[in-house]
Length: 321
Image (tube, rainbow, N blue to C red; front, top):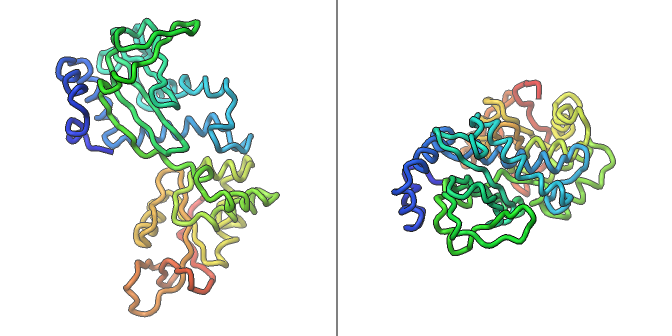
């Protein structure tokens, strides 16, 4: 994601021109970027909204393509609601939000360019949001809607789409930013089948953390694989995946500061809020500083290589999860 100072260099001349002549757009842009300088909060809202629709704990689904048509239609409303909750935007007078004193309509599409613009949005700013779980990307931009930039509409509610040649006028806050990964969707299908071949939720979680190492695994993935209300219990050390995999040398780090520090020292992805990262480790030899290592449970440990033997792993600092 581009820092705010670099945004102007990344957008095209058409969008820059629109920005220079639209103080309200500048005010909305600045407000959103102050609230979320990196786009992390925005991306988490989109990740959580997609997961909310999939409802994996109940349905076992992990792929947008398996949603019903009515569920996909509801996605736009959920994105609008969840963004408002996260950023505490006020209700708009005529549009969805009131941001920096400006009415802004929110439109989401899973298909890039598929935003459906209602006639009443003409003349107003629109926050255009796109996310594609299969590509692992998302974008969000601002555009003041003009009638001549829209395609004609044949649907009952007269909603229109933006002509492809005028999408260059969108001022992108974030363009093709990385969406927090849907691990189940993107993992090797053979490994995924191995995970779901187990009958018990505990066995499925054990297999997940065994097969998917050094990658961030979100809480919703854990929920979907466990399909149990007490799914977090299945991760814990007291009889959960941490206990089961310790004999194989696999440690599972959560989003606690001490665990994040361990992950950083082992040079594996650091779990962020609501995430886990597993990695197999082996004891580091005396003076072995050729690889990253960390002091755990009274000894020094390093990430295991393919040829390293399996050995009983260390205990992590104790936490509830």
